[in-house]
Length: 313
Image (tube, rainbow, N blue to C red; front, top):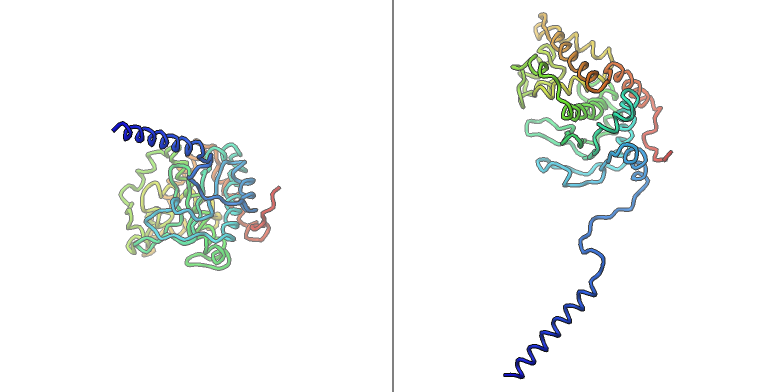
């Protein structure tokens, strides 16, 4: 019995020594790893133009965790991502820098952009062009269609510049407006102008889609709810020419039968609130912002801006 106890004690001591030895031999490298990527020239360009000056990150590599699990999503094409990054910088970041100052852009501009290759399709037959989350993140979808949209005319849009506006640039300004609203809410009086004419997710239905202008909405989507109405007014105003806006106001002045309608007056009343909000809250003149955005759009469409260069100044 004594021998058994002695053997047991020896075995326990040996086991303890073995464990101690194993602990001493543990590697100082963690067994938990994350994906590591060697930075390419585009990564360095993004650091120089977005991360370092504005603390803005652009995720162009596919990250499932950054997407909505409600949609089927695919990676964004690399070359399309390069062009889109240039467009965001030249048409959005630089425009706000020019009108509102660099400090405004650094403080308020979204800190994360996520690129997705395909559109996010809804069951109602519509697509999500973009989303804003938490006052910091904008997701842009459909990037792989960028070359076609910049080279041809789609749907109701008469030229590639209007296509680019509708599918991407206006979307960025629209989502940025949501972020500004999350920082400082817009006046409640805006919500009371057409409170009974919002139709939630039925905005795309045929009975509503043909009457939005003379009902006092700048787009079909503006009929969804007041916050979308507000964002559509700002984004469509600053990304379209005065001539285009005037043509919409002319259409808003008559109904489907050609009878006088009050759509123009309603839209102008809403727009005045939007303009005052931007001036009083952020000291931004929307008319000046529109001039800058349109000038920059024309420079892009006339080929005066290199949208593929990754040279770092």
